[in-house]
Length: 53
Image 1 (cartoon, rainbow, N blue to C red):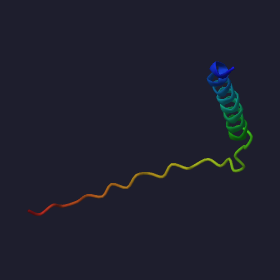
Image 2: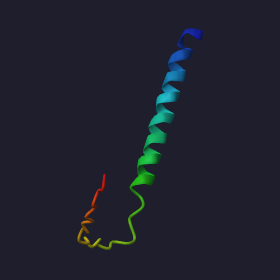
Image 3: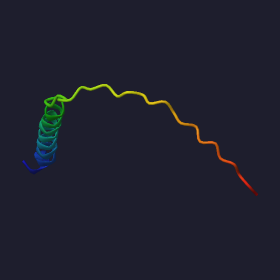
Image 4: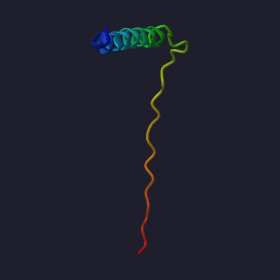
């Protein structure tokens, strides 16, 4: 029946969209960071500027 065709397209779109999102989410959480080093905080150097107008 031609009247049901838009519902079939909508159903296909939702199924493929859900599969696509699951694929992206699984690939995002699949990788773990290899280097776990701590960044050392360096003291901030104050540069005193003498403005001469």
